[in-house]
Image 1 (cartoon, rainbow, N blue to C red):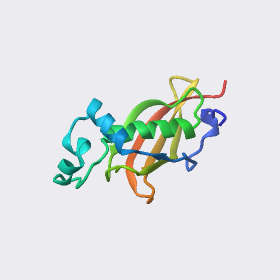
Image 2 (image 1 turned 90 degrees about the horizontal axis):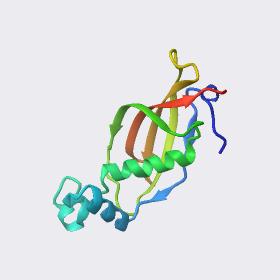
Image 3 (image 1 turned 120 degrees about the vertical axis):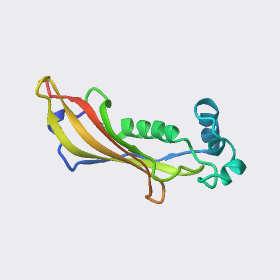
Length: 147
């Protein structure tokens, strides 16, 4: 995928990632290391919570999302966040879910104070294999202008 500069983006463009299967072992490993709560660590304990079963940490989902964005969204200079407008997890990620990301460009803004760059406002929706959103973020990304 060729890197794209600010001038090559337009509102309405959509970039789609490939899929990534989240395994139970990966959910448990992430939870043990970074988010050791019962609904992320033990299916039996999780059944008695609002999740109703083992669920990946939202931060684990965010990490998978970032990987998929980097693999499918080509701003020159990399995916560099400025300000995050929104982050939500409308439903849990379960073992065996296959995630993919759709990144839609919402706005392209050249910088007034830094002529060599601008901002992309993007909605990145992480979907499971049933096309249900499991995470939605709206970051503002710093993107260089064509030299």
